[in-house]
Length: 73
Image 1: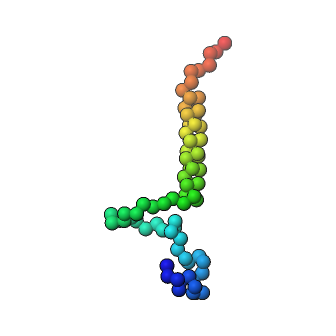
Image 2: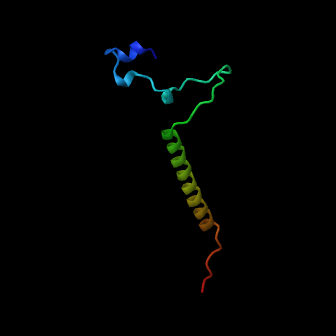
Image 3: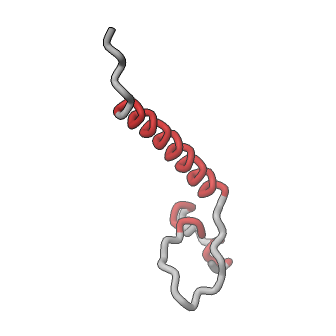
């Protein structure tokens, strides 16, 4: 981004591109490693937590389904 683009009043704050919102496909010639932002890391952590909880709930349900029938007295 050029300095004059930052100073111009034509562009609003919303139109300035943010690097973490860049969704262009990587090419073979791209040699730089992408960096994750704290926001992205937070989303990944939350997704991993949700996935772990869902897995534990599914295991409980499977154990309940395949548990031996209670003894009839």
